Length: 227
Image (cartoon, one colour):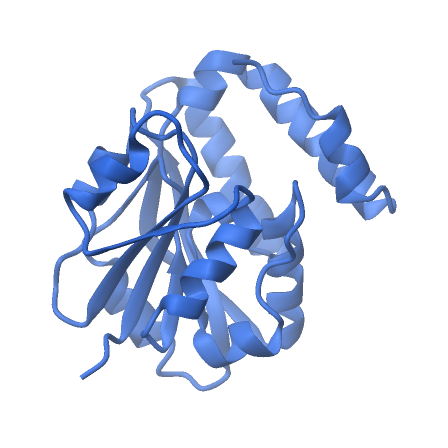
């Protein structure tokens, strides 16, 4: 019997976090776990192979990698998870329950950040409020979708930036999107590295520019993450 749920994780030089993410994945029957590596130079793919049977290799690009994983996946529900995120153990059952409603095309989880810092807890609260108000899920919340809907929407746009936002907009237009109370807990590393104020302001400016019509290709040329 094919798996009911396929969890797809795109990676690129994620050796520092990938084993923690994979160790936390639910291991119940009917769940397929796939890593799609974009050519890591730090041994990410080798680490993933210690935990999984399916590790795919493709060109770098999160949208391209997620689409490649979806093509190989056997589940009729696809769940896309970032490499630095831990999925709660009750997530698969909650997804299945949500999709018993035929009007639901997909959804996402409550965002949590792996930190006790008050400012990062506020970032998570604002992000969760934003998605509930707009109805558009973001990639770090763990987007799930019926395979039939994913294929009808043409998968993720293979852009260098904001592919998750665009897919979330398309998903909302396709039908009912739900936001579950189960959490996806992401690493605080990017806020720790870049600073909460800088990372938050930059990201919101880029989203605004995208909605104003600036192409993701141009935005990617301006994007300069702090390393």
